[in-house]
Length: 310
Image 1 (cartoon, one colour):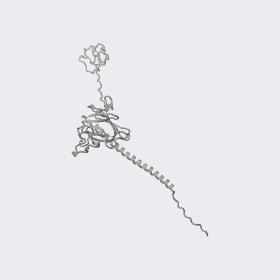
Image 2 (cartoon, one colour; image 1 turned 45 degrees about the horizontal axis):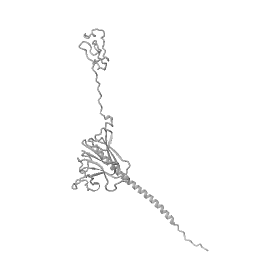
Image 3 (tube, helix red, strand yellow; image 1 turned 45 degrees about the vertical axis):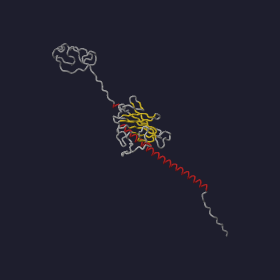
Image 4 (cartoon, helix red, strand yellow; image 1 turned 90 degrees about the horizontal axis):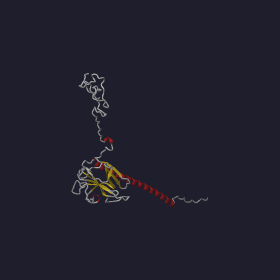
């Protein structure tokens, strides 16, 4: 009996082309997934950065609001342009406010406080759109002690970086970083204008701050009211009421045809006639007559003679 020779079973496997196609598809999926994860991480980082930046801006706005609304009556404000351009660089100096920006080793100080911007000296000095980057800060003679032997010093100026003195020898304390511009304007109600410079002895009714952060297209505009603001123009109910003119009445008995005072209800006259009641005293003028006509007696009796009794 003939038997068929047993043949070896064929082993099924992937070809090299199939392996290459599978690896290519896996790489594409892996790259797409990695791009999605990287984009999510970047978006979350940017969101945290924006939230932190917004918190700093809100804190600075709140700090300025407290400083301006609590200015004493002896305070004065000076606003000057230090460098012309677009936008202009300004410095806002407040004098006579001993509790303005009350922090540091000397929270209560009688020195002048100046708010301004300073260019960044370390790190990237320009933003992605090519605009220079500044730091908003304040300067006061005693806000940052330069003596290293002071034990109550919060920070000390080392003469380098952001705490380096400027060309006038002033040391600045930073309050807000990554700023493209900071401009101020004072409102003058006499001619209804906003002025970029202010040197008057009186405070402006309002102060406007335009803050432009680096990397943002729209600036932030904040208007602060100062304690000298009068609200009568905005609320008619607070306007002072003008006193009404009193009506002066001419004396009775005039013949000019004008208004006369109403007759008084008097008693009986000493002449025996009734005074100021219908003109029963004879040919005298009746006070209640609108044109000053003379009234005729009622029959020529004893009552019309003016000297008779009742």
